[in-house]
Structure formats: C-alpha cells, structure tokens
Image (cartoon, rainbow, N blue to C red; front, side):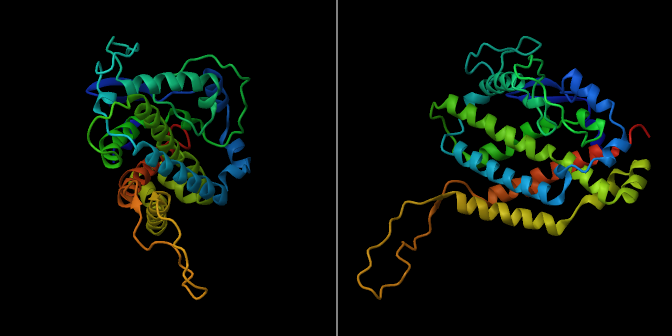
Length: 314
C-alpha cells in the first residue's frame, strides 16, 4: 500500500496542465506551534473536538453542505471552458508562466482572500494552492489536538481529480450555457467542502488512536499500513453513511412543484398532495457512489497517513 507517497509535494492536473502543490500549507508560526507539541501534551488534552459525538455531528453537517453544494452546481451546464486553460483569458499564471484555467484562477484568488481571514490557520482547512497572504485578523491559538505530522498531510490533488472526473460529469448536464462565473464559484464551494470532509480524517484518526492506543501503536511501530487500514475500517458504519447520504440527496434534491389538492369533503383523505414522484435535481445514487468510492476511501487514506506518522520518526 503506497499511501506515504502523498505526503510532501503534491501535483494537481487541471485542463492538462500541472500545478505543484506542497503538503506543508500552514504559516510558519502555526508550524512552530505544532512542532513544539509533545505527545504527552496531546494525550492530556480532553478537547470535545475529539469526542465521538462531536465528530459524528460534524461529519453529518458536512454531508448536508456537500449535497447542497452539489445541488447548486447542478443547475448549470458542465461548461468545459471553465476547466480549460486559455479558454477564458484570466490574469493568472502558474510558476511556469502557463495561464490558469478559470477554475484555477477563481480557486487561487478565493484562497488568497480566505488566507487573509485566517481560514488556513485552522487545522481542519486545507488549501489547494500555496497561500502566503498576510493575516488581516489577529491569529488564533488552537489547542494541540493533532500531532505535528498533521501539518504535512494534504491530498487535495486527489480531491481535485475526483471532483473533475467523477463528481462534475455526474451532477451536471453536458453542454455550455455560458454561466462560467457561476459554475466556477460553485465549483470552489464543492471543492472546499469535499476537502474539509476528507481531511477531517485526521481528527477521526486521532480519536481512534486514543481509544485503541496499544493496538495502533503496535501497527505504527511496524509501519503496517494495511493493518492500520483494517483496524480503522468499520463496514457497518460505512454502509450507514452511504444509506444516509442517499436519503439526504433524495430529500434535499426534490423539486417540490406540486400544490395541495382542494379537499371535496370532510371525509377526504388527509393526503392532499399529488402522489406523482418528484423530480430530483441530482442523482441520489451518484451521491452515494461518490461517498462509497471516493469520500470515505480518501478519508481513510488520510487516517492511515496520519497514523503512520503519529508517533514521529520510527
């Protein structure tokens, strides 16, 4: 299992062009705070962020965000020009002088703005591009919940690939409706939501490590990635997640266009609404497949990456 290859330098391919992406994304001060955190300090921390109820609640809320963002993006055509460099002459270029696609440009500029508002100093946020913008808000000191290795893990290259190749073709209709700006902005929201959900695996991994410290420590010292993956996998829980997101996509994605029927008498059935099946804005099966085939496997990849490095150099 070659999960370690995703630490450090990352590569993101958009519209046939490559963007180098470093896994070391935090500010220098944030890195210094993380590196000074001892394992003893981490284990003493009893932050509610690592409680099972809090983690479950956060993941469920993130499902809602992801599904609603998918629904919003689905109202526009796929618009291939948004993802093709030079199709829209944006004033942005990569380190090799190649012009960004519109999506790259919107994502890059959005992240630079959000970085100024300290978004990426939070341990649950991960940029797709390098961010070096100065803060305009005073920094926040977060409690030492995660091990220092968390700073080095960023698999947004895979998040981007999954979104462009699996999600986008499934939630949009082929064609070009010229709504490039709207499409690009909504793409950014989808990408940010997926990235946050997948990298939340770091918190899940830390909680699992604390609940089964002895078992995970043995596997970590042996650098047994497959053993770690087996220990953290719960097929029953994964099935519940898949079933839940399918139901949510069905519920949230209904096009409620029918109106109540007027009852003809006091004895009329209480079901006054049309029984015609509502039209769905996105495919519930697609959302379930995205979670089953990509979101949960990538989350577990983050968990394994984190746990393999959880105890520091072996």
